[in-house]
Amino acid sequence: MNIEKKENGNEITLMLAGRLDTTTAPQLEEKINENMEGAETMILDFKELEYLSSAGLRVLLGTHKTFMKRGKGGLVIRHVNETIHEVFEVTGFLDILNVE
Amino acid sequence: MKELTVDATLESIPAITDFVDEQLEQFGCPMKAQAQIDIAIDELFSNIARYAYHPGVGPATVRVEVIEAPLSVVITFIDQGVPYDPLSQADPDVTLSAEERELGGLGIYIVKKNMSEITYEYKDGRNILRIRKEL
Image (cartoon, rainbow over all chains, first blue to last red; front, top):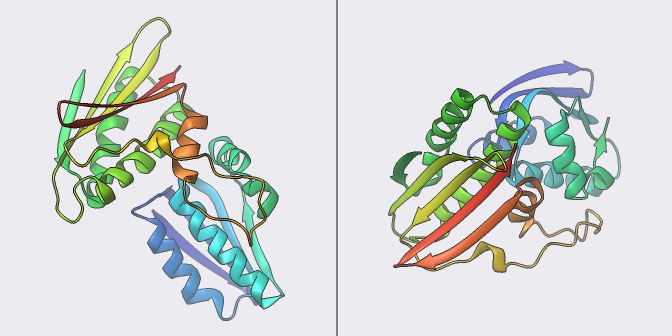
């Protein structure tokens, strides 16, 4: 998986490409943690992401919870493909996460 | 039928995924079904890697077959580790809020939802876990 970062003030966008699974999820977690401090909004752009597994869901939920504890800002997920959308749907994550 | 035997470790997941994808591409499997099968591999093989031979390491075999009537891809995972039926896990409650969420069991649940069939048997000292995806 490749992660490209874009910064716009306190809005951080991470553009993911490839597979978000057991072997790559730690890479995303690390990247998010590196950027959480200054981030008001963390946007994850899934345009080039092929799929994610439950290991990816774990990182997304953890990040979402961190924002909830802070009480401001949030995680936004953009450009999900059909396969990923279905994973969010069957796991109930569509109701938890902000998926645009 | 093609098969690959590797060490049952998390590091083997990319090799297993590439091997299966190569077979599926030759067969002209639709991209979406391929992605769903790849997710299933990640969920199931990561379980085998973590628990089958813990704390040691042992072999796992992944077999890919295409069957007719109805046209399906069948992937079989075989290991000689401790007997473990992943289907014995209760389905998670997917209606809970973020605070109440526990992530255990979510992986196998995704596999159940994405595959047409999933079966498990323990036979001759081997865990045999099989998924079938109808195309």
